[in-house]
Amino acid sequence: MFKSLQILLLALIGTLVSITCFAGSQKEEPLSNSVKALMQRSISDRASPRLVFATPEEGSAWLNEMSRRLQKRMPDTEYREDFLRTVHYEATRAGIDPQMVLGLIQVESGFKKYAVSSVGARGFMQVMPFWVRSIGTNDHNLFHLRLNLRYGCTILRHYIDIERGDLYRALGRYNGSLGKPQYPNLVLGAWRKNWDYSTKNWEYAPKNT
Image (tube, helix red, strand yellow):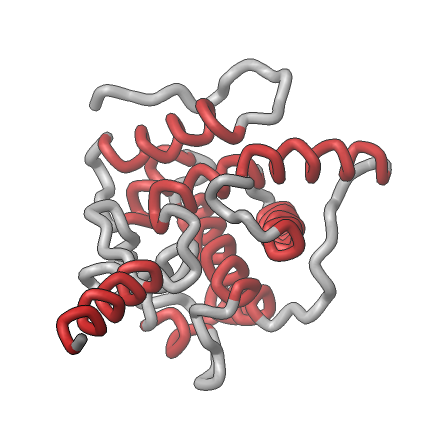
């Protein structure tokens, strides 16, 4: 009986905690006062998440398609659609493609809300806890769906700005593997294979170096 309980407990922990070799390990670096203030304003946003499309019909089409693709990973319809609306809102307000963010989440956490990496990164977008100290407040819980996505998108936007729009290098910074091709290629590959929703030409092709 005791052994069965142990097995059950381990299985439960396995569903809550994911240690992945590609989980985020952002480097803690000094921020200028202006950058810190900008990121703090972004984190403090309290507007309700919503789809940002030219028409409601376009938003519904996107939500239905992304929901269909995500169904196996997130079976609960209400939670899945709330997650997708939040991804779209937080990514769009940060000036990032929401589909790319879905690719990043797939690689970082496998869409596990309570994923924790071997270096302590947390949640869907594997945010390092030092960011709460740097730009947030003590009551910020990185396992909270919207807070995690808001932090992740804000941090990635910061790295894109540092790299002057070079998404490939920004992804390397996000993962703490700047200069190495494996992680950016995984994210961009997941984006292109599973989440691409654009008729435009592929802009960020994976690189070999």
